[in-house]
Image (cartoon, rainbow, N blue to C red; front, side, top):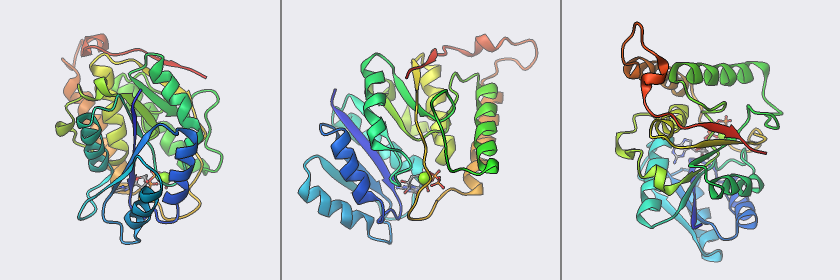
Length: 255
Ligand SMILES: Nc1nc2c(ncn2[C@@H]2O[C@H](COP(=O)(O)OP(=O)(O)OP(=O)(O)O)[C@@H](O)[C@H]2O)c(=O)[nH]1
Ligand SMILES: [Mg+2]
């Protein structure tokens, strides 16, 4: 299936070259679109230089920092327009190992609408995180799963492959969130339109170079939005059955 890997970047000059080279090795047939928010460290220039060497690598450059959600949104719209059948999301800081991508693609090839690289199913791991960060992520995910009745153990994971047909049904222009909220919102929308979600175990390693763009604002945004969606979509506060919420796709884990 024709695949486009969308890589959002903001100041990833120290990582992007290696990400692109490892991706090319892991999935030689996939095209790559880097969506860069005018990184001051020259990330886009590095991508351009590599694009001259490798066919199928492109970069979209925006005038300023518009956020992760907006970068994915633009990358997906571009991918849909150009007729790709699979759209991949992946961080550009080497936290997501390109070598794991073929397993996600196999899951989509096998019929999944969304394959999520999951840290929270057997076989998944985060070797370097502190107890605090692990607890925040784990409980954030449990909260989202409970409030939204979402059949995903790792809804904040940013390593995913979508079948393009499901992305086309998600009404991307109305997406409200950025950061972790964006990942949860996309998974929730897939479930609501009846898409099948499969989780594939991944190891998430901490970035070794560059700085994190994660912030308290992104965490609070995700928490508030999840709570709001849960309230908004609950048909009647009292006496409602969670199964009334509408079509929810099933989820299963694969090795
Ligand atoms: N285009 C674009 N990319 C972004 C923006 N913010 C983050 N990114 C990219 O999104 C990916 C994930 O961001 P990170 O800062 O690594 O966030 P994280 O993985 O949640 O946090 P860490 O584990 O601390 O690295 C990286 O490739 C970033 O360069 C943004 O505003 N615009
Ligand atoms: Mg990261």
